[in-house]
Amino acid sequence: MSEHIFPGEPPPRPEPSSASRERQRPEFSRFEVYDGRPDGAIPLPGAFLVLGSMIGVGLALGFVAGFVGRWFYLMLVYPGAVGAGIGAAGMWAIRVGKVRNPLFAVAASVLAGALAMLMIQYAYYLHFMDRVRLEQPALAPLLDQGAVSLIDFIKLRAKEGISIGRPGQGKGTNLGEIGTYIYWAVELAIIIGLAWLLTIDEAGQPFCRRCNSWKPMQVLGVLAFSKEEAADILRGGDLTRLASPNPATIADAQISAAICRQCGTEGLLNIRLDWLSVNKKGEVSAKKIMQCIYPGHALPVLEDAIYPRDS
Image (cartoon, rainbow, N blue to C red; front, side, top):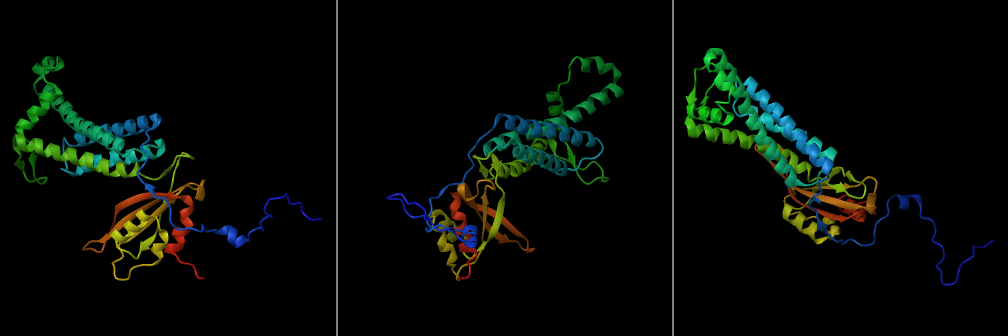
């Protein structure tokens, strides 16, 4: 029995083979290119989670650093550990809270870092108060009345100056009042800087708004182009140009892509281009050059351009 065909209706298409269904390619190669910056969303629960985690960890680590510092203080090392701890907590909270705003991550890093630095001073302040009560009991009533505030103690400590030197080699070199403030500023910059570096990149990771989930970023390979040429190609939207490398250039551009596992090629494709460099020790580092967004169906074309198939 023949199948009925309505007038004006095209005949039914034959079923594609399993191979063609597995890997279909669009017939065009030039795509619309969109800005790859994150959407900047700050979900309210995520904001509280990020702030609470970073501030809480910062206060805890700051107090531990100040408490241990009564006996020995590893200058620049303790602030680095505090900053790394704040950053690690921020990365976790950003991922769980789905915060996609790098500026918010920076603000949280600054706030948590400042409070952590203040907590270090507060731990020293508590030790100072306990020592005065123990050595000069007559002053205890004045201390209980708030005769010496935390700000007063910080000013007094700066006026006396902190000393730097190797452990076990005397008091070391006193930095003086101005030098002490400068050193504290350096420590604060280390704490904030490390937390900043860890969280700002996490908040800028690819995200699928349709599925409300993060997209895994995967390295596709190193392009046989310079970083300038590769960036120009990606901005232009003609991905087939990647299949025609320039042998006269140094290949230093690494390309990565992220696509939603649920949406697949029906979603959006995030592309990131990194510049690869090698230091004197032979260690390779990657620095982000640009990021952009393509339609999801550009992924097969991009893969074919990077990994040409045998005809």
